[in-house]
Image (cartoon, rainbow, N blue to C red):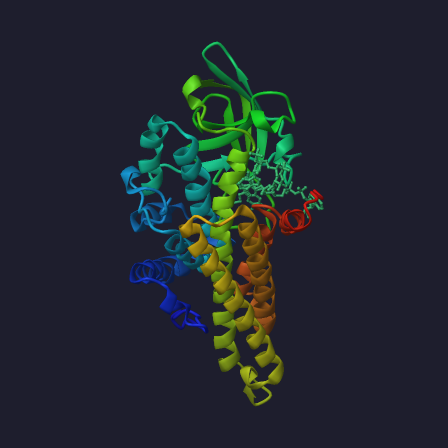
Length: 394
Ligand code: TGC
Ligand code: FAD
């Protein structure tokens, strides 16, 4: 089953890509094939984020890849960035999550809302992977509805006093720095939510691993607790302004997920196609049976639709016309598509499909997290419902 991955491109989307975009995609594809695939199964079973890959991701220019060169980033366009997410998630959703959080949820807000000092202090070392970041928005009682957050940053004479807790935080226990969203005014007043840069060695900050996960096992997920964390005035990201700021970060990360999900689906399709051709049952390959051919045809159709959606979204992002609602549609559709394909692929593989040597079940389990985070499938349905009808049904 170890045949080299050559890509799935039934509609010749390759011909729509620039040479640079193809080169970026092929570089990351090669790295995933050579460096990630040999270790990901064990890391998953050992429930371990393979931190040793972080410097390599930095060297490849993957971290914050669409941010400016001035800060040590690759300054790629958004299609190239999306292709990177696609290839990483072809390996594992947890590895794409690491890169999404670092780039879209930590580096992007520092770039967009931080001071110039914040940018020069943090972005170059986040780009190389010398520093790891996490993004704290979700709280135990405020997941889909971050507007209600109760983590509070209280103004003091010379800075801020941070108290509260965040839950389900990717990279939380590995992080050197946390971007933390906190209420600075009255609870429920979304205009007074602000973002803070919190070095994780600050007294009063602690991170605890989330135990008992059955999904995204090669990713670090933690709870963050802030107990009288004293922060200097300069910890505040000066341009952060209301709930809109963290939601703008989510738009960046959801964009990457729309591409990433296609990668996970491609991995499952590739695996099941090879298996269908090789697995002999009732005197012939199962791929020669009509049921499996329908299954494969459905998979190819859905992947092709997802690829076209991601590609068009990427071109709109590069043109500056993409809206958050268009990102919601693509995140929702492509993750749902990838969930379907991973499940069908696992089924096609029969008993072998539950083994870690094959990848579809790992993707299937991972994708349940992807379906839930960055706005659940339901929340994106409601965002689209609001766009269509003008009525918010949250
Ligand atoms: P609402 O009144 O709709 O919006 C408040 C302000 O924000 C603006 N806005 C956005 N801006 C940019 N991008 C978006 N996606 C935006 N959505 C809204 C909006 O225009 C408004 O601006 P202004 O200027 O008028 O103030 O706020 P609401 O409280 O009604 O929110 C609605 C809702 C449900 C859509 C929102 O709360 C939501 O998206 N909830 C889902 C929460 C979520 O996705 N959390 C993700 C946490 S991070 C994570 O999961 C990381 S996983 C790891 C990985 O990525 O791999
Ligand atoms: P809830 O909001 O409690 O939702 C429970 C159910 O109710 C869902 O089915 C939901 O769709 C549904 N629901 C909610 N509201 C409505 C409604 N109005 N109408 C109808 N149905 C509704 N967060 C971060 O801040 N940073 C991270 O790095 C991060 N990483 C994560 C990593 C993993 C592995 C996971 C699982 C989560 C991560 N999250 C992170 C949190 C993630 O964003 C939340 O789990 C997600 O937003 C959903 O919140 P919740 O889990 O509290 O579910």
